[in-house]
Length: 370
View (cartoon, rainbow, N blue to C red):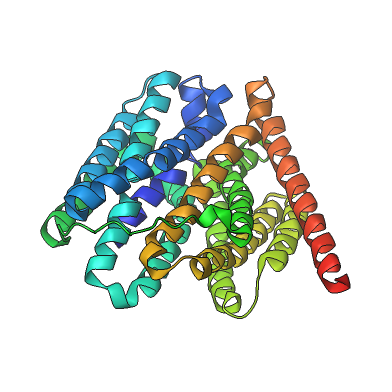
């Protein structure tokens, strides 16, 4: 399941470093944000039907079917010769990737019920790290082999989790809970979902538009872009570790947004290395904030609905990322140049961080006064 999680998460950002090259080659720059957004959108919308199938036929079949569809979509992306083909293939990828979440939760519940929380946390750590690693890795492979051949390799490697899943995952069906957990009726859960969506806008905005900024404003090649995008991965990994430790004792949301805000301010300095360092600081802020949101939802959900809690946060993350990268790409769709579009995306992320940080300060002041 960790291999499948890594594979599906990888493709969320694998094309980001190469995306300026891909969209230019296919004359699809106007759809720059949608190349990532449509993957996240279909990966979110497809989770409920895959979850129903997982309950009815067991996690093994769902895992194998989903990963096979994902591999097919990945291979098809590599064959794209137009914007329409590219977007449709990305949608197919997302549909397949959506199976990983419900199949993983179901399999862990059956085999490792006593260690459910720890293993779900491990899956989350792998997902966050690999998502941001996808950009640099895609850039390195794209610069070495070309973006099409690198995707062919990824599609072939997907055969490993497919085979392992077929021979190792359980087929046990999970009985439905007597009463569905109505998590979104709880104000703390709604707050956690909203914060997750907003943090996802920053996470996917950085991974999608930092490469465009580096290549359009600073004229860097793929290899150099991949190198400067790597600190963002390190930032979110460090932030996730720190956030996971601190979140057990206190809410880290406010600290997270202040960190994001400071990083985005640094990213405005017109020096490539400083912009990359600022993005890494902002990514660390995202890593600090996300564990608190998952913990908040899990505290409301019962053990029987733990998978629904994880799915709620996963869905919020994907929806926030899908909407974010699409909205941040509006200037490009309106005809802005690549450099202007990237700068506008960072400006909008900075504005969002300012608003959320200010709202957090006001809320904390009201709590103290109350």
